[in-house]
Length: 242
Image 1 (spheres, rainbow, N blue to C red):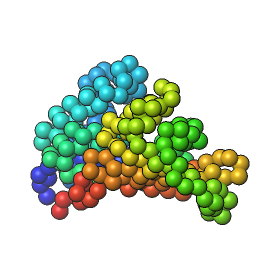
Image 2: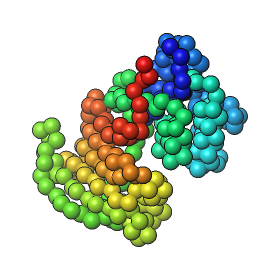
Image 3: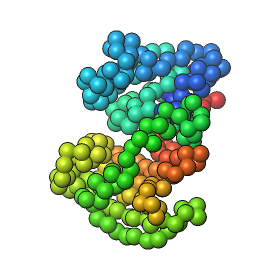
Image 4: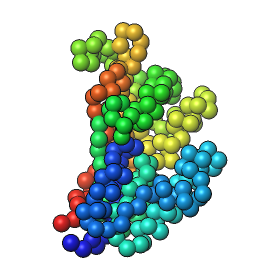
């Protein structure tokens, strides 16, 4: 077969974009490119160094520039960074110039492909984030609701992102809210299940950004269970070309 457009793979870190991309490229008999590797080559720095020295906005600008160059090259298979598809301009470009395939995979700390992502999420203080959002949001409900047989209390919180950012009590809370505002999120619905030891065991969130309805569910107590993320809608991704 002749590939008419580049096949761009998107998905969270550890979903298998690179490993699957290389196999797909071999099967289609086309070149394979990893966007992060191309960014590092262009900047003569690692992704971590770029983030550390210049911040995420500069990294996303460079990422968009590199992906634009790659998509204007002859058709190939492209593995993008985990956050590339969240950028409006990059997403629009990929939708126009490529077949975009979203890879989903459960997070398993015993799987080297997802262990690093599991480690990062495991270090997030979900209770603290929840308290930050609760301080600027509206508590809509509270109910006793067990999770997989474990007694827990479910808290429902609604956050108006613009209002919350304007009234954020500290810089740390603002840092949690600003990326949501920049992504066009207006309202954020959150649910958190807290067990009797006052530890979070399940977290759900839902919001709309740029016309996309996105939801996520994480079981924080058992990393053997999948993390379910619903995004983007069907018209933002494509099946493999015949």
